[in-house]
Length: 125
Image 1 (tube, one colour):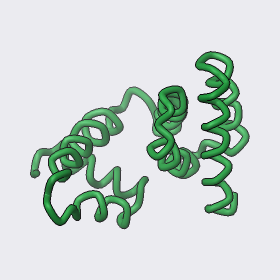
Image 2: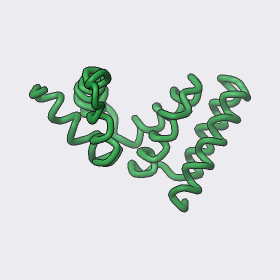
Image 3: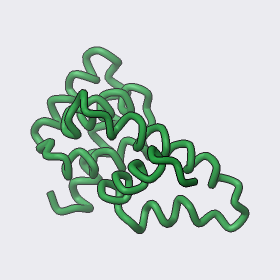
């Protein structure tokens, strides 16, 4: 892909998720999931994350709330790491997850706390 949004998205995704993560996403030996990662990179990261209307920290907080509310644990774990890179503190993440627990249900909150704690342990936060 060579669109401007893809290029912006690839640079931002690599910066925030890490080169190893992005390289792995695009290294499907059967090329089956590559179109998905192209779409995700161009639109999620290039067209939306790169917009000037919200700063990265705010976007991270939104993603933490949405992904935890939807019980998307694997994606949530990655976005906890990204949120920390974007300046969201461990305490602020806890506050986001308490909000999720109250508004979206305790099971979503409990799962999100469990995943976040595991990420913090991995990173030594």
